[in-house]
Image (cartoon, rainbow, N blue to C red):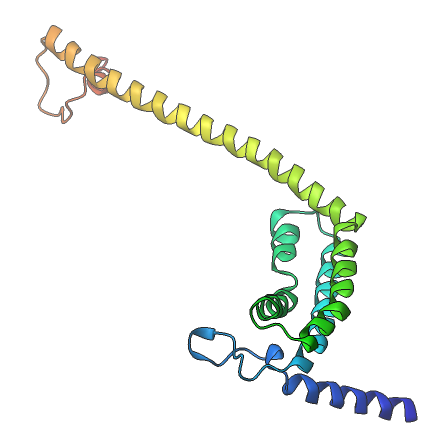
Length: 202
């Protein structure tokens, strides 16, 4: 029971921290610009740690997906992963360059090793690479299939159009060469339809 209470207290504490951290909320500023006036130095480290945790969970979801690796279920979620982390790093990096201070420099020395380790863990993740490689090979194979299908469709379109045009020309030439008294029931201008429908009638 005591462990449950501690867990609940910890969750409440983390929720309070996140609620007061601008990085954990959608920016309510005009055009979604960064609210620099609300961001304090102590906001960066918790956001970095949470960003790492979230991206790790996103990567785990990709590599634990039992479906065949595809562009949609592997590449797309990989590209979208780490949104919070990227957002925090962008703000911190710009501020560190433009308005650096001893406090920011000290923070950088703390979080840079964490970021390097995190990036290496992703880059060297063999299971993730295997899925990306499989998705790439499948996509490359699909490209060839799609290309062949498009080539075949284009060929048939050109061929059918050519045959249609040739038949029209041939139909006109046939009428020019043939004189026949057609019964009134003939309601077509096609020489071939006349042959099929009327010329063999007795």
